[in-house]
Length: 149
Image (cartoon, rainbow, N blue to C red; front, side):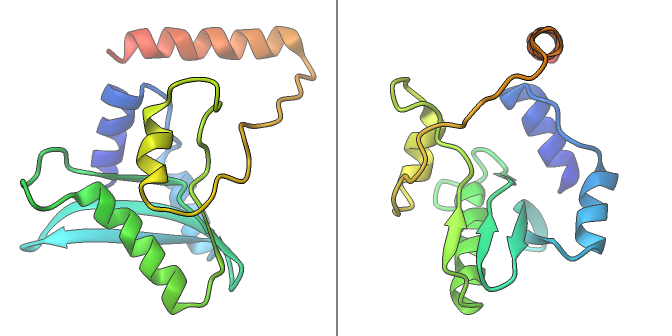
């Protein structure tokens, strides 16, 4: 499953993803839930979701095989697994973590809005403490996006 996440982020999202050890550390410290979506014994999707016991769960990273089957949508099933877990464990809030700026077209926001709920934060607060390092980081992400094509 982790290989599928790496492929998704490398080819489609074009953003860096933490190493497997990062996720294992979260799992070992019991602050992340891992959901695996299987069909006919094959892993077709999943999600890594930090959680606050009985309070909230966050759809941190999730993905599924693209064009897997005309009636099976692995990415949606990965999200539904999180929703089901939240309902079964009386977790009041599922945070989809990011909907982009409302003044810009953003397909991810359209996708996330299909699950219902309400948009409670419109973007992120961004306080830059070191403009030079901030610009280097932005440049690095642009270079990585071109390199990962």
